[in-house]
Amino acid sequence: MPNEATPSHGVMEGQGAYNKYAKLPAGGAALALPLLERAASDVAVGTVDQPVVIADYGSSQGKNSLVPMQVALRILRPRVGATRPIFVFHIDQPSNDFNSLFEILAADPDRYALNDPNVYPGAIGRSFYENVLPPGSVGLGWCSYAAVWLSRIPTSIPDHFISLRSPDAVRAEFARQGAQDWEAFLSLRATELSNGGRLVVVLPALADDGLTGFENIMDQANAVLAEMVSDGAITAEERARMALRAYPRLKSSLLAPFAHDGHFQHLIVEEFEMSVLQDAAWSEFERDGNKESLAAKHALFFRSVFMPSLASALTSVRAGDADALHNFGDRLEAGLKGRVASQPRAMHSFVQTIVLAKRA
Image (cartoon, rainbow, N blue to C red):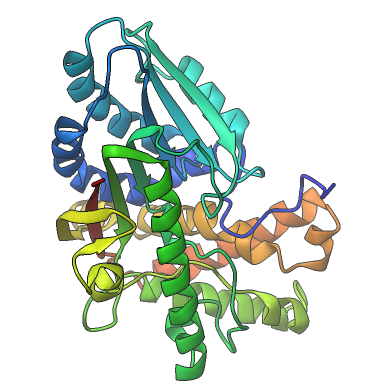
């Protein structure tokens, strides 16, 4: 059994850090809420003797799921009546920080089941690149930012840790993996959705000019890692192993499985929306001019989302040294704060939302 201190690729920083600092994904999800409302209004709710199932694919530690689940329940509850059971399954990898998730579900003042005794939250520790729920059981699926993570890293990334800053041959390998994983994700969800069910997927986007909005923070972090090698904090071999499975896609890539006749595995695209997500931390910086506050927000976002994946390349972390994980995170965060404060830049990004319906 792997040591629990060893992070898996794509798993966010534990002890509630993602809940505290991942404000950007919450902002992206907020842009998709009107589409989630329409999807919940259009879901086929089936017969009265069946519970309604909502699946939250890639829930992480739960905080960012509260508002979307509230929105879905607000639409569904009047449609199915006051007593019909509604199950909400939060799904993430087994090494996810489920303790923080359960604390949110039990005690957060904004928990969605607070005033509805017939809503039943649960959790499933399994990758969504596997079957996670029975065929035909899901009425409404929600996946916010999680499907940006690939199932595997297809090749090493020289001199960086993100594929978008890599040579053409490396980018081609990631593009192939991205296409395979997107089709696999859709196929699995199509099996789990009931006829008339809806799936809403929110993703950080790659714009047509090849930009995501995260280039600066990624390059600054890459420079900090180079400094850590020079300082002897990590080895060159460990640095060379570092790579992220995060892979933002073009709109054309998301729609490619539907290009032939508009269908893929009984799924059709009902809505697609591309939005610009303004950097809230930058807006605050424009008002108060506080570089240190801006740098802290950007650095903590990066740490909570990406640091565990990078740390999984460290020999000591692989061996289960929790102190090594935290020390690496502290050093990376401090370096990022210094660089961002000296060169402040906005992190406006792009968000895609796709709404899919299952037709028999």
